[in-house]
Length: 198
Length: 198
DNA sequence: CCTGGATGTTAGTCATCATTAACTGATTCG
DNA sequence: CGAATCAGTTAATGATGACTAACATCCAGG
Image (cartoon, rainbow over the protein chains, first blue to last red):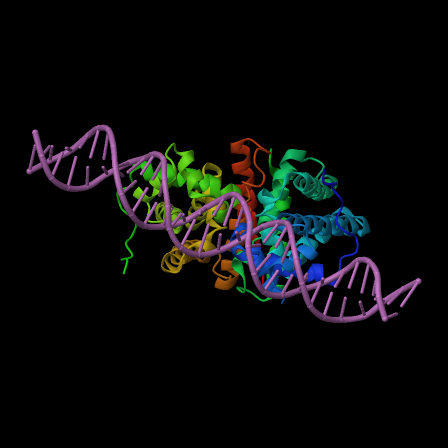
């Protein structure tokens, strides 16, 4: 009945504001732990006014995850194709993920926590984008390490995501640049090590 | 008024059963996304019967996280002290974390998702155990790489936890043993790389 | 001017849910 | 035997929360 439409391509500033506030709240207490009233309150309007911008709480979450997945993937494609060689492409992917994780910790947190709460039509689409993002990494890695088998590279990629996305857990241990460098080095050698795996 | 008591040292099989079922549910939809009724249903009893075993939903969660944190930490201490040298100690810590993550994906998921929903008296205690667990790693790493500064080692440890705990996200990509080996290798070289960090 | 859309507001409504109450059947053990 | 404790049950209760309705304001453009 309800036609599945790709999210409005005119992201009004209000929508963004709401999505940002909701992300912070969801990251702290989870989707079901946050009320519509609270989300509204976080942007100065109250409760049901949100329904002027989103058709419901779930669709708000869906749009949030969809947006994150799209940003990650398109940024990855751009960076990878711009790079002059495989090694540089990998570095660009790593740097992109690190920047995103450090700049938007709440989005990263929600992104890998709340997929289970997205209703079905949108969930499939988000998964598709996530898969494409992983495959972007696998493609670059395959060029760089032709010996490694794709399932191994996929598993290693997921592991590196876990490593890079860990920053919300170790907030403030190190200044941002030092943290970025540290993570970049760890990710690079961790990926290089899979070459030696059978 | 309610005296904070360390969790009953006689873990009745019923309690464990309930905690296990609840962990699976919490991992899938989050603490607030699961009802008492559902948790009861998952173990064949219905709803309010849970109050014969736990004083409330939150205390159930608290006990769950407390138990996980304790198991991780005591296992780490045991393994580290048993090891003949620093390198072996680190390998033992890595292997322990991998085994736990692969054997209990739901517990791992809940452990780093739901701390924000634990009420205050217990939350502090859980954090304390988590801190001790991290410090166990930092101690071993310091012995192994005397040059590195503790904040860097702490950040690197958190990153490696993210790497090792990523398995719930990449379920079934690889057979268990291959996955364990892959993660172990990645973690080892990632940690070794911090030596070169300023 | 005045009409209509965009954006809010407050006051319901209806479900769901955590928790409590009151009651029942076993099993233990004195 | 009998009393108590254990582990359940079903039926309230009281909050909370998502969503809807009805109503207000503020422009923009004809």
